[in-house]
Length: 225
Image (cartoon, rainbow, N blue to C red; front, top):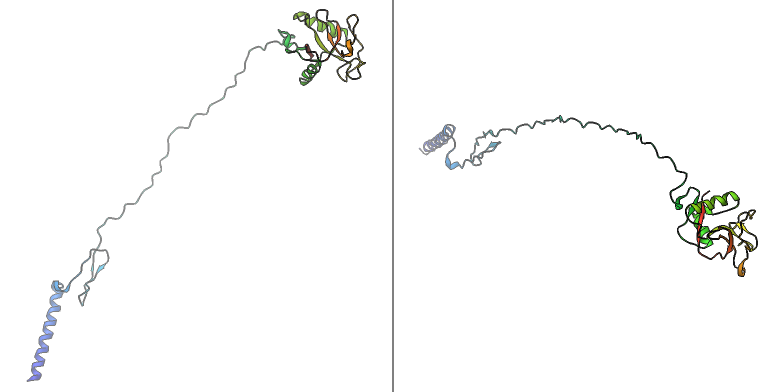
């Protein structure tokens, strides 16, 4: 009798267990089984069910559209090239004048605007690649006097390059120039007054030669060539 009761109890248990499994196939797990559902792209698994049911959820998110690169070609016309025009002047050049309109820009003589002693006058002319006036012939002396007369300069005394500074007795043109072979001394000149007159100047008005103190500041003219 006891054995029959056990068999009956086992039969009831199998029926209950079998009935629950059959119901789960048709209606799914009960609420008490704590079924978890997550809306993801992967499979969903119940943590408490002895036989987890796998559910695949497909994402409905639309894929990102592809980006298409568009190349824009400029239709702007290139700037036109500029052409340089060479303009040839047809103006007739002015003829060169043989003499400047004033005494300070003569083609052969240069009148300095300041007064200097003989040494300063010599340096002034040399710095400009000229030389203090040299009157070593009748021709150049008359030409120079004509220049002074034309520009009303005869009333002033002028230094020349003549001096005797090298040995205090021999007259030369420049410090190391040639000896005088031509002269136009005024009467009683040179007199070497007080033994201090070693440079040659031109007397005002007559333009004759006179020896004078080299330290005296007077007018002077440079010979360009």
